[in-house]
Structures are given as C-alpha cells and as structure tokens.
Length: 277
View: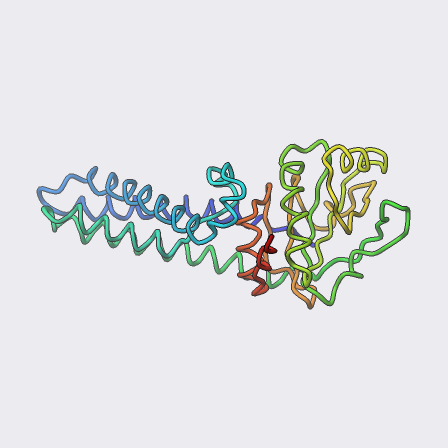
C-alpha cells in the first residue's frame, strides 16, 4: 500500500499552479506595448496572497466552534484549512480591481490564472486517482494494550480513521486530546490509534500523565503499519470508508477543525451537539 500525504501534495500543487500562472502572465504581458512584464507577475503573487487569506478566514468562520475551543489552531495552516473556491474568487476579484486603470494587463493575468487553475485541477485529479487505486484497509496483526491480538482490518464495516503516532512525537501529543474528543463526538466512526515502536509502559505512562481516555489504542512494536501504508513521518492520519477504501490522508497533526472537515467531506459526519449543562 502506498501512503498519500494529502496536504503536502495539495500544497505542492498550489505552488506549481502559482508558478505556471506567474510564467504565463509574464509571457503574455511581454507582447503588450506599454505594459511592464514585471507587473503581471507581481499581480499574480499579490492575488495569491489575497486568495489564501480569504480562503483561510472563510474556513475559520465555517469551523468557528472548533477554533473557539482551541484558538491557537487558527495559525496552524498545516491543517490544510482553506476554502479554495472562495480564495480563487477573491483573487480574481482582486485582479479586476487592480487592473481597473490598466485594463490591457487584465487579459494576460487572467490567462495566467486560468492556466494555474487547470494545473491545480490536474494535480487534484492525480491525487484522486492515486487514492482510488490505493489498496484497501490493510490486514496487519497488532496488539491492544492488554496484550490481546487484533487485526487492523477487523475495524472495517464502518468509516475508519487510522492515526499513526508515538509518545516522543510533539505533534502527536498535541493532537491526542482532539482524537479523544472525536471518539466521543463521532460514535459511527472507528478511530484507531496505532502506536509505532513503543512498549506498553511508555504508552500507559503517557496516557496517565496527560489524563487521556482513549479507545482502540493498538501497539505496533516493529512499525509495520508505517511500512505497509507508506507513511513517511509521524503523525499520519488515514481515512477509510466503510468498504475499507482509502479516501483521504493527512500528514502532520490534526486540529479539531481539520478533523471535523475531513469527516464531513468524506463521510458526511457532523459532530454531535455539545451537551447542555
């Protein structure tokens, strides 16, 4: 099985799309009289920053309840929290506004944006194809903390979120309370936390020290799950549908917002309402 780090691939796709948009805009602007080629490239970069800002703010507003519970997560852009289509619309609107006085510049810049969007869409299609062709939830022999043998594939039949982690990993430690809350908020989803390479005493000590009440913690002493899934770093989170098909991955720590968004996008799962006091 080959792991697919969803957010890094998307980030690379955005960077590549921006480079192509910048290049196309500059090449087309070169053909226009009295239009500095540099202006086209600068406008592409400015529009990108405006688009990213709007996309991020919109995402924060959408998942505001999760961010209120953990305000520092707002600056953790590694969670992949952007509403891309709103960012694109904002970027295009910004270009129209900036070219009001220089309408000749508008066409090459918008052509660059179109080329970038096509590149970004192609990268998204490639990621989708990779996920569709990925093998299903693997069969890996693991053990629970009490020593009982279990197999990762036993959790199929429901949506499954597999998180690979270790106690020495700072982002793993930070995301554990998020996963603890998620296990309670999404009873229809199996959250399976597969520890990589540590002994029972180390894991138990961490859970006790952090006052964590987590279910489905499994031991993988030889880190076979990382090898089988192709994960390159910890933490990595895999999302499998009820048929065991890989539908998304996330490299790095998850926030409450990014986890809720992924569960909604992939499984249509919404968090349960907070209990009234």
